[in-house]
Amino acid sequence: MNRLRQTRKLKGITLDEVAKDIGITKQALSYYETEEREPKKETWIKLADYYCVPVSYLMGLPSGLVEYIDQLGYLNFEKLHEFIIQWAEDRKIISPKNVSKQFMKVTEELGELAEGINKNDEDKTKDSLGDIMVTLIILAQDLNFDLLDCLNSAYRVIQNRKGKTINGVFVKESDLHE
Image (cartoon, rainbow, N blue to C red):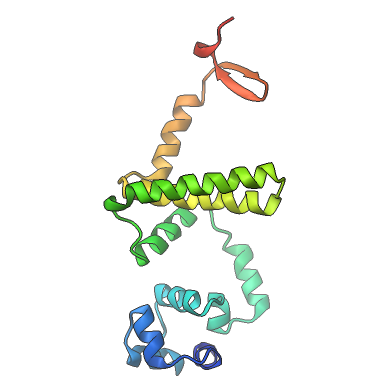
């Protein structure tokens, strides 16, 4: 049994409000709440985001099953990349017109990473690294690049590079002045 109706009522929101806010019809939402129809994956995600609860909670999945699925469904980089792009497209973030704004988001997250490192705040550092990846994936899409292709290209360039690590920084052989 899903928890859509229960969650909506607990939040004190009408069918009309939810339907309008997430871009579906009131009738469709009613069908989902009465389980006459099953929402698409994207709709489950929109509803979970809207109510600020996990999708698994809305779907009424038992916690043991959720933990099992989570273990089986550990997302690899490619899948996360795909989900992030879908998330950004659903929110109309991705657009070639947004390149400079998205670049500013990348630099904002870099600043937060610097703060996390400087304050030895492990949680902030980890969160900032994740946020940087998200903003880079979106920026690459804005520029019509695939970040995975960019990463592959960069690796092919450095994979056989020779040089030295000096004071914790790798200096490529062509830049060494001995």
